[in-house]
Image 1 (cartoon, rainbow, N blue to C red):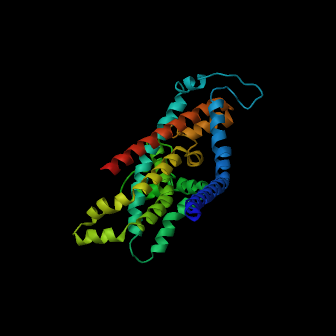
Image 2 (image 1 turned 45 degrees about the vertical axis):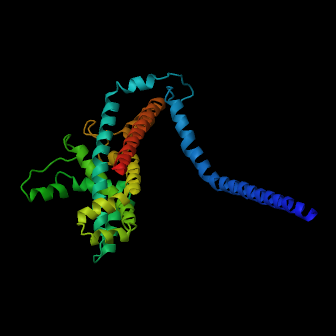
Image 3 (image 1 turned 180 degrees about the horizontal axis):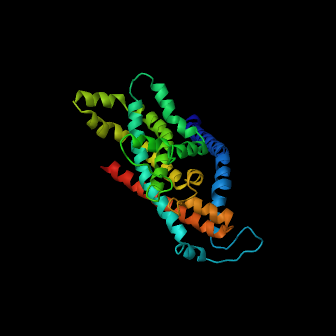
Length: 312
């Protein structure tokens, strides 16, 4: 009789011990997880959270690298929207992003599809397309300054073969920003091509073969099989492209310094000049906050477009 009564008690104690072991294991896993996350969290806190908070606070002051400062509230923001240079910089940056991002993404995907084929010398072509990405922007800008040279540049030399008159590419207000866009697109192709190429090689071969059996054309296979599989990668490329285009600076600084006039003035260049030349750090911080808001809006729109495409 006692043996029969002891069995439920032993079973209950056994379950309790197992539950206790599971709880201990879970706590151990949590501690290990936090330990592994700590370096990334410290990095994010030191290099992202603290600078963002500092920019937000400084944007409400007139701090200018001195010992004295005063609280101006939203005064910097109201001054910004009356600043012609800021308005030009904001418009040029938005226009640069609206043109460079879709063209560079489309060209990169097209080239990646070509490089995904079995052709001779594929390694050379992959390397050639990636080289501009790892080349210093100053070197890239120097090369393109020679290409755009009005007297002896390659661009005018090529156009002269077809009877076109020479152009002052970077000195002409009508072509200066467009000329920079061409360089930005060319330089940014490599990274996007590598990402797309890796994604294309991960597309299910079974689905592609099934589409072949069903008699699908190349366009139908791309539209209904390949493109949906690239959805997450497309969004990643879009986000990185948005951030990269809004941060364009060194290319503009080396090639035009924002000229002619203010025709190629962009946000980061305007922020740099206000902060480090005019020493108006509070004013430049307000510009930075506006730039972060615009980037967030672009990313939000990109997210909505991705969801709409996924739902379709």
